Amino acid sequence: MENFKKHTITNGVKKLLAELAEGNIFGERVTLVAATKTRTPEEIQQAIDAGVSDIGENKAQEFREKYDMIRGGNRHFIGHLQTNKVKYLVGKTHLIHSVDRDELAEEIARRAQKLGIVQNVLIQINIGCEQTKGGYPLKRGLETFERLKETEGLSPLGFMAMLPDSKDEALLGELADRMRALFDEAKKSDPRVAYLSMGMSGDWRLCLRHGANMIRLGTAIFGERVY
Image (cartoon, rainbow, N blue to C red; front, top):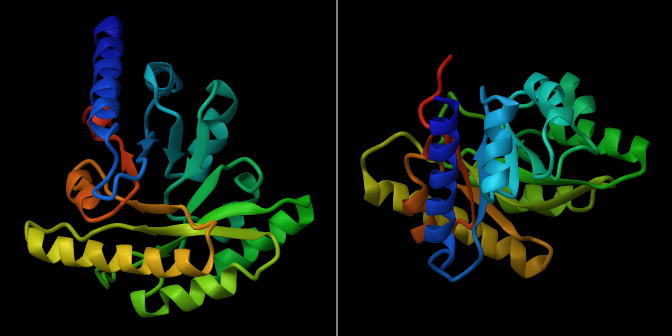
């Protein structure tokens, strides 16, 4: 069973990387972040060995527990982050995707300054205006970016969003286009802007068609989660 699982993960990764080789709609390189929530260190290592270069955890506790058990891979944090858990991540993450409020940005900056480093982050936008999701409203996206890029200890490299769970592809495409427009506007003012993290196992192809260049996939790599 273990060999079959390894074979499945390896095949899934190679298939995805082959499909992503041409980039997004603009020909930009697409970064595949393996979403590793509930996945064992062994499964994660198999994905890295198969070619995954970036891995993302949703919970700070899992991030801490697995950190030294995995070899290689840029480490990302992609879940909701409480301010009291920031200390476990700053300086150990290539990128924190989920900066969804000023209080969190300030705590990350404070911790980074204390360590004498600059922490790469993405600004989370609540593109669907959903009450169940965090994030800045779209209309505040550029202002927030301009403000945070002047904050010592922070380096905002782009934006993250989660599209609503909807079958309306026209609506989803419109929302994704708005995110891409925000990304392009920020990039005009700062060439360090590099990432539009948008797209999960259910909608990543649509997101690539509308300009995402970083996607966060779990089920597509590892199969359905077992809780």
